[in-house]
Length: 286
Image: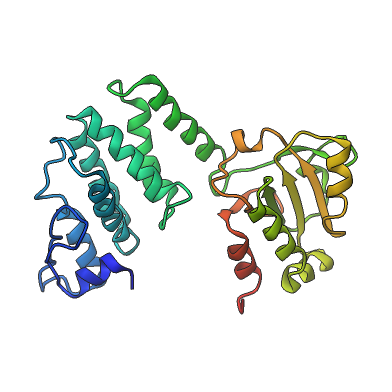
């Protein structure tokens, strides 16, 4: 069980090292994990005045991450309510509001996040993008994130255009009769190279591709060149290979390599999967 939730379950109200305050204890009347976590997040910040300057940034982030740790076990409506309340209180101090946005991004959206949730992160990012208190560049930062998230929500249609190794423009919809699409987004990092090699040799994924149950489209975030096309042609015989120099700007790609899964109508079924996450999805015994 996650560390912060373990504190709640064990009823340990003592202040934890590196945090701002002792966390609230759920009363005995809260008999389920969800009810206990609901109580804790509802009262989490009761004894902290977020309108006052944040004196210890490290402790604030540690405390916020513990706060977020309870979200996965709490009721959605309670989570959204406490997020709105926290943002409203933080708006009385512009520096704190900006700090709250930075910490929320790292804890809920960025590569360091232990709990990814578009819905919860949007609840933070939307008021930050609209806040006249914050500098224009800060508002634009959150607005651009919101645009990318909204463009590729689960259920949305994604008919990407890309340049193939033949140097011509293609779209995903050009691949007729596909039952499901696996999109693999790569950059120039070592992690992308290793992820590509792992997927190219995965038995379960190759069985899906060779049976026609799915097609894998590997998209690299570079401009087309003959040199790239020569290299990419050797990636995997049963992959469709392309490049798109705008994909990192237009899509919600938080880590590389990054995987999306689409259905036969090009609707997003899953997104922001790691290579390991994709391998686990296609092979339950992985």
